[in-house]
Image 1 (cartoon, rainbow, N blue to C red):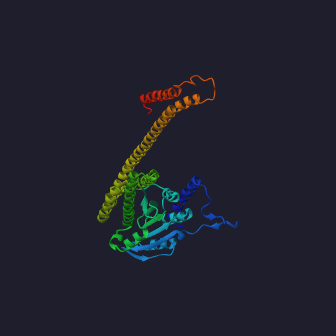
Image 2: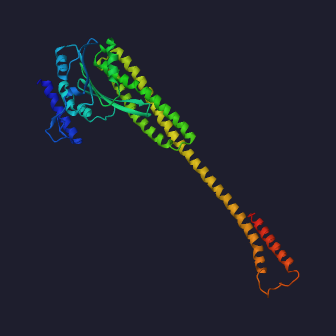
Image 3: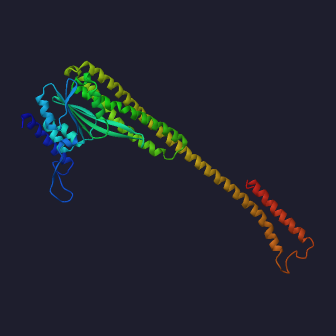
Length: 385
């Protein structure tokens, strides 16, 4: 084993041990047979390799079948560049790659753990970049986030993808169709990946804008489910902001190194265009957060007003009902008085005062009228009638 490969292997192993201490699991190089048999070896790194190619002067000259041959041909052919793409590699597979290219232990640890925030770090001659890609799913109206780690060396580019986005196959095809740009080396590939990630933000911004427009309609339409949708969309916007905001710092860091690392003028203009698009996306995301906060406040106000209207309506109905009950009770009391008088005079007893009185019947009627009139006047004054 060459000296540079042995030096790379030691820190990569230390990174793997730290990762295992944080996230206990079976040894990465072994996996148990679920049927209880002997341990099986982990799959080789080639199983996670999407594409491996060698380029010279912007033209693809070779496509080695495995990583070992890619590294060997890269060493045997000065002036060439290797571009290797990995998709969700295991820890053991990343260790193999680290051994071949001498990657720094901290960068390998980040690539193993994944779920990193976007950042830019330089380890000697190797540039390590973490990007958060995003894509809008029309069917579910959700934002799907991916993650890509990019190792950029003097003569190689290694991409480690942890999600469906971005589509690096399209990036590779675009670069191979533009030899003048690809001839500029690994930095050109980095900027192409950056451009693909940032361009992928535009459909997401459009999709979120449509969702916000729909939510505004639902809020004024009184949809009771809109509060939940506002909350879910706010979380997506926050996650999207976590992907876009650090990207501006990454682009600023690359811009600051133009003079020091002698970046080509064409790449400088290319990066400037990417920075403009990234700034636009970041500003739109900030606007979305403010709009959603205002919508949430407005929705709470409308819900409160609706509840107040319902309480007012119930109060009015209760008041009307009470008025009706008072009227019924008043008339019942008025009609109850003649009933009492008639009941008294209708009792079958011989010794009842005024029983044989000639004016007894008119007097009973007069008494009923007098009592009813008195009660009517009394209830009227109290607004019961």
